[in-house]
Image (cartoon, rainbow, N blue to C red; front, side):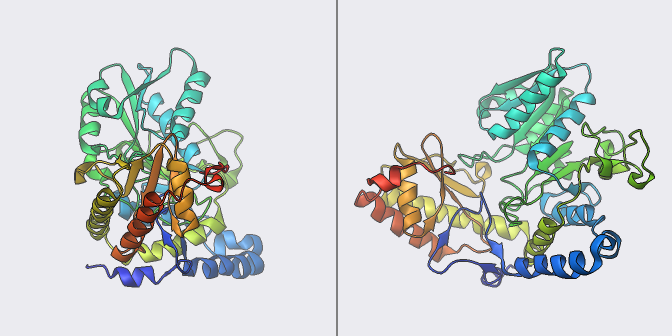
Length: 398
């Protein structure tokens, strides 16, 4: 397959005149999503009411959608399920992994991990007590830090700030060599870079769908459990829909078969409808095509910005093997610069303390968008257009 990215771009709603380089935070709306959600509301919820759980296939939807995501992350069919939030899935995966490695007490992560993952690990350690701890090292030190004391490695493959990409295969192999279990967060990987969970023999993986997968704000998370663990991993959050027979209403919990046991609460049916509309677009491409186009776009952006804006310092690796699908630059006035860009129709975002962050999604971003973004950024920097009070007033969401 050779992807026609002009065809995929036509399937998104993109406001006129905007260059949207923030799909790594919230993807744009697929044009079909509104109608898909409306149909779910009117034809299913409206006309079928509670019978839609059976007639419209709502109860099976989390696993059906999980299989569609599995193709994008190199997972085996039947081993990904959607639902709940990413933080919930992080907690589930870590807790299950720790229970499978009961003689060890250390969760290893890195300082480039998303803070929410670290918060969940810290909270779990406090709840468990008994010497459990979170060990955080620099991203470059992860491999060296894996030793026989580590129970679980909890790593986000692509750093949310810099776009630095970990070597999943090498880290997973070393973790297994030392008897540790791996948990990978794919929040900035799924739909951004090729992932091979099965080939790397990953134990657990989690991710969200509102970034590169374009499921919309609050889109459901997903969790992967390797086939070898599917019938033994015990879910720490023993939710009703993860029960072997939810409608038997047993007073005691019995985990469901395989990945079904990782379900917790009622599936977000409207969000899943939007996600399915988005996944229809993903059926038109391959991750190999996405990766090739992404690297070309990010190379173009890096070269253009560095040539025109020498005061911006690149934070993202130049090495393709170490780069996700975003480009970040350091600048002491990063927040104000980003607000000036947004005011001129180039949308990225800011991450403390000093990072301007730009995401590149070939499904709807092309070379022309890159060139326009470079031109606007060049003007903002050359004329100090960021140096205005309205651009320095911090909003709640950056």
